[in-house]
Image (cartoon, rainbow, N blue to C red):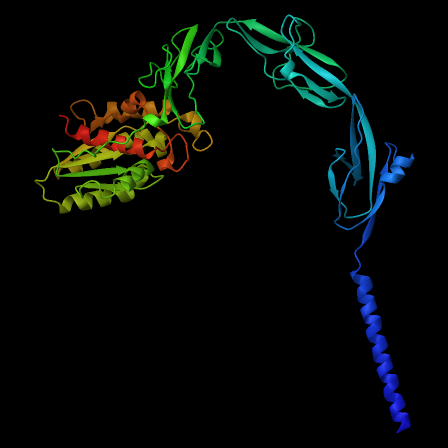
Length: 458
């Protein structure tokens, strides 16, 4: 019995000892790792007391602040070498410790890069750069004037070796550059308040055109005029040829506050039923109309679509609805397609007359509404291939091929010219997306109103 009792005590002691060993080993394993961070001179040596003082031992994933070092006229970097590559850190940067690490301190002398006018009498101080040897300076744009334009930079006054704007030049020390200019004529383009917007040099361009402009405040630049302060009825549109070699033109800016929706929506008297067929712009109108007009106005529309959708889907829906109506009822069909496949104009001209004749057999009057205005400056990040000129070309071909002459199959609705003259706002149904293609609620309703009133004009 005594032997059994002693054996049990020995077994319990061994089990207790094993548990202690297991727990202690886990405690050791759970202890966070620590790494050494060394700061050295450019040669990689801990050569002074301050480098030794900066060195530290930190737990893994600890963030440290790299020591601050500065001296007038110099630029310092902490350089970390790894796998034959160097990574540069500024003094004061934060660094996360993940392994034993060694930083080397490098110092670079700073030099001034200065830019002067072509005579060297005036420095463009806003263009001055302070860089160190080995860095590259990107040559900035060259200021111009009414009678001259900048073409680049030279290293001597009126030098012949011209470096163009955007050229990268290695810094070798203090450097000076002088504007290289040439005589020219120019047109001055101003904001509506008279402040300079841009100069367009005309002697070096065969056919300079007025640019499109996108304003960040939501107002719409309709075009340009010789008269300052106009808000509608521009003399020239974006893409129009500038008619003079010199002179001053002002933006015609339509304020968003003037974009008023119609007080009431017009109901045409000549027709019993009206069908609108279009893309996302027509979708915007249909969503706004809701129950404000009678069910005698119907919409067949879908965003992002064009001729192919019309042929495969929209015409079938339209034809089916028209056939179900009494033939004696007068019906109007407004087609407002083209902005999504503006390059496909030849196909429109080829196939649209056939569809129009089929619908006319059911007492339908056919109308083609212009592709309405775009602002290419606002839409370049969204729809870069649509421009004012392409819209104009599309509308002109539609008018000439489908809406004039004895064989015409459509009546043309020139809403585009109406909106460009009287003003419009791009704001995707008032959702804050100013993409230069879609319209505000008020503009969409004004387009609807224009179309409805045109139906009653003989």
